[in-house]
Length: 297
Ligand code: HEM
Ligand code: HEM
Image 1: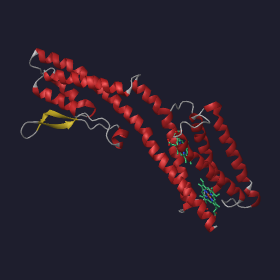
Image 2: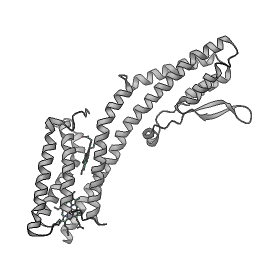
Image 3: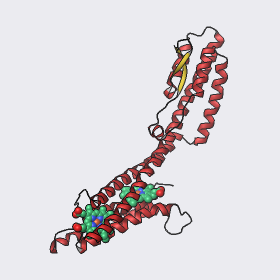
Image 4: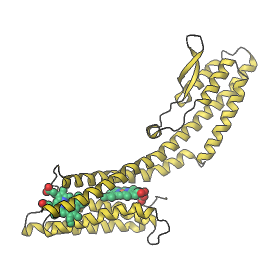
């Protein structure tokens, strides 16, 4: 989805709606002091609670609305803009309704969940505003598929050149290509951690065979091949290593961009896994809160 303009949609239309709703809520809240003490169970408290409750259900409805692309009505960008601004107003309305009476009860729990959903929402706005631009900058006009295609080509060229080198260099380069790790679990994607390995000839095992070592960021293999250039015995081998090194550096740069691309996408995916279940929890707590105040009041 195109997110540019989510905040400024139609001349900040929903910011004005949200400010209007907030002003109404503050006036309603203030009117309680003329008669009674401020509480959730005055008629003003009920009105504020009902607005907040309806608001939460409506905000949750976005999840359903987003999956009905064929539905008519306002465009998705408008829905998202309204979601953000009215979501913030709902927080104020709920705070005035509960008068911030926080306790370890289902009521306090409802308020706490609302707060967490709102905070996660603000983080989401930040991510939706920054990640697409960061992704475009990182890709530099190239798609992820094209980056992978370039990587495969570099892999093939690196293997071919390695075959012409000393067997130790050949084994090291081949293993670096084969043991390059991209992506992985949720944590690896989010942190961009690199668990790539290679067979390091400079770290011999008990029988003198090369052992596995970290090749994070392809640093170890590039260092190993560079260190071999001054030590090359034959002129032909030195020339091959000199051809191989820029390919390894290019591979390093492409891999870095692919990993960053995956990381930026994972931020948005992971964020939804936080915001949506929390809002489902909030709706469940809200329904329990309403049922319990009507049962025990
Ligand atoms: C997001 C929506 C809502 C939140 C976060 C919320 C939260 C709270 C909190 C924290 C309290 C204070 C409890 C206490 O003093 O221990 C409260 C009180 C109350 N809420 Fe809500 N509430 C919401 C929606 C509603 C709705 C939709 C209704 C019913 C229409 C409602 C009815 C009440 C009533 C009657 C009280 C007063 C209970 C009493 O003082 O005995 N609330 N609410
Ligand atoms: C009670 C409050 C809220 C509830 C129940 C709620 C619920 C939801 C749901 C169900 C979605 C749809 C996710 C999907 O299925 O793709 C969503 C998306 C989103 N929410 Fe909230 N949300 C709330 C408050 C907020 C607030 C206050 C903000 C920002 C300040 C916010 C920011 C976002 C953003 C940026 C998206 C993704 C944009 C989009 O798909 O339109 N949310 N929220």
